Image 1: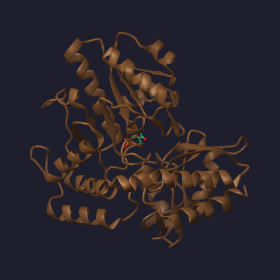
Image 2: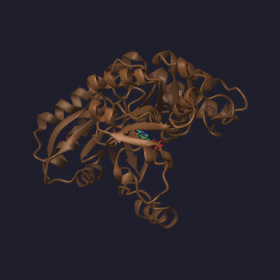
Image 3: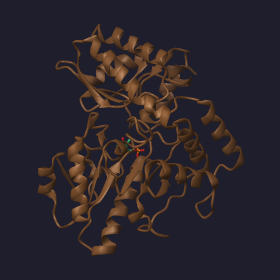
Image 4: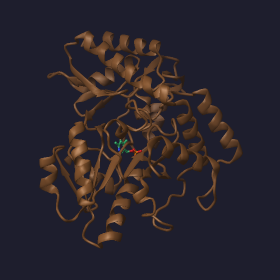
Length: 393
Ligand SMILES: *Cc1c(COP(=O)(O)O)cnc(C)c1O
């Protein structure tokens, strides 16, 4: 099958919910991918921040194939080793107390929203189910997480949405304005991903954490994109000097396999008891074994290199002084690049993709989420395509 034949097949038999690039990826190794015709691409996207170890990492591959051969699924009515071992690794390295595993980021966020509402219900009864979110946030595409998203563009078509979300600008004044007696939690990303790679101000986050404590609101951090080493620490909250009551994770956790979930602190470990929450596929042994391999490869020393790599990529781009671009920002290997007025981020991204550098957009800019293990050579190859393409637009 060639690319055109595959595109035709896709268009005939798939619901067309995605604006795909005219590229048919076939295989790869690390941060280097190949399409059906054998053309090479440097991966500055990792899927969308999913391939934390890159493609086909030997330790990941061994863990996945061995677990698949042993036990590919068990229901949550039984104990399985990878599930408990992954939970232990996550809790030990994050200072959190217990984990729940589902399958996606939106599901992880649904879980912590349920957690906050039940925490509040158990203690205060009905009428305290509102969650404050932030403008420009993104928490998922289920009916509830769409409602949570602090971007109007997500609040169309699918009425009625879940009630009980109120969004505010990331300032203490704006939070105080929406802080009614009906609030049970604040949910935020520490670096807003889809919204444009927008890191939160540290002082704001710490003041917000204090307010949560004072009002007995749960502090919920959406680490779906920022988690699992992406920003240079296992979780971004570890750089913000806060410890959330709960955080969600997904994208990078299983190195490419579907998995999401959340971690809770000691105060919240017993809020969701038997029968209150669950998932048929959640904590699948193959995904969990993959997660264990990801966390073993991403030890503290490896994660520490994430910041250096991010700084190198950002400095290289700033040094190019390309007229179509503005400033860079971000944390670790979560990088946003402003696009200058008169240029369109989606057009620039599409040009880069077909020229052999897989990139993403976010907000009105470009976004890089390369595999955390990307090599110096791969970074330089990618940056060279970047310069070639964008110096000619
Ligand atoms: C991608 C993302 C989600 C949604 O994850 P899915 O796995 O697509 O449900 C939620 N929150 C953030 C911050 C994300 O980046």
